[in-house]
Image 1 (tube, rainbow, N blue to C red):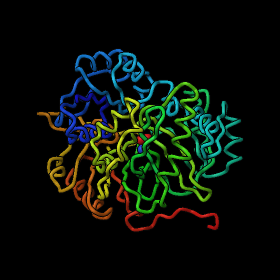
Image 2: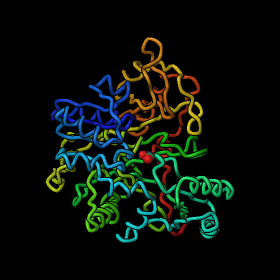
Image 3: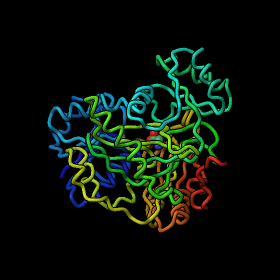
Amino acid sequence: MKVLVLGSGAREHAIVAGLIRDPQVDAVIAAPGNPGIALMCDTRPVEATDPAAVTALAHDLDADLVVIGPEAPLVAGVADALREASLPVFGPSGAAAVLEGSKAFAKEIMAAAGVPTAEAVAAADETDAADALDRFGAPYVVKADGLAAGKGVVVTEDRDAALAHVRSCLSVADRVVIEDYLDGPEVSLFVLCDGVTAVPLEPAQDFKRIGDGDTGPNTGGMGAYSPLPWAPPGLVEEIVTTVAQPVVDEMARRGTPFAGLLYCGLALTARGLRVVEFNVRFGDPETQSVLARLETPLSTALMAAATGTLAELPSLQWSSDASVTVVMAAAGYPEAPVTGAPITGLTEAAAQDGVMVLHAGTTASGTAGQLATSGGRVLSVVANAPTLAEARERAYAAAALISFDGQQQRSDIAAAAAAGQITIPSTTD
Ligand code: GLY
């Protein structure tokens, strides 16, 4: 099987790595890819949000399956164009991708499907937004209504900062979403969907704030781990039954079936599980750790979702190892990442036992092909080991071998979980 992977981040690097170790895959081509991906497979330049260009490339390559990594091509209708050309594609249609593209639409679907979520108001002006902020109280949750690559959410105790984000959102969109704050630990569950059937992967947790102890501004994600040793028994089944399957059913009922990856971002609150957000693609950096533990050939799972045969897919097989991903980010991230810093130590880090180093914001265009930083999140260091504590040690030991000026990383990825310190609030707390 020949697979074309669209995208250029660490998530796509993880997908490529998963496909390369899949015995059913003969060739992987990434477009446009990145310098790390280019060490593993052929890469091609492409305008990833151009449906005609991607379809032409898939035809040229005679691809058996196209996997779309990021949300922007999905919202731009790239999956629709590929389906119209009868090419199997992993990724939802433009109409279904609105689940991520519009937070207000996601709320509408959840209301129709009876899915538990935070109470929310879609405000069209600053006065309505301020009223909603006062009604829900601090901490304030303000979400941009549109694609924001995971960075459009501000959670703050400071009402002025919340209002500043309201104004910034309303300067680029007609609506801003104000939500009730959800207490309790967060869970990311990726669910493969084929328009009818929903098949969950193993859950993960990510770390959205830049600083240790969940401090500082939100980012695209500073680290992740899987599995979740603290998750209550039956959690995954409950999420599928109360969240993923009702959403798949509601999308089908509306004539916009959801086929691809439904990313359910949830909080386990004192009042039960609540959806924080949906995304319509693999999450970054959770994918790096989730796919590092998948033993079933990845192409089988993605192809079943692409061809409407998930009901026939045998149970997915998982490594009993834990996996921890530590993101190394550039100086100035997330506000103003500094680029162009030379990176050293990658080869040594990648040679460590159980470790993969996945690229995101790197470029090989420096002097003599020297790798340098070219984006906010630069690298994901992924380590597998029998326990979460050992996976943490491996990931941090490997990350310590890599250096670039001003690099930032959190030191507490998976720390609370490894120490058994995560609890789900109860109504009696
Ligand atoms: N993990 C956050 C995201 O992928 O949007």
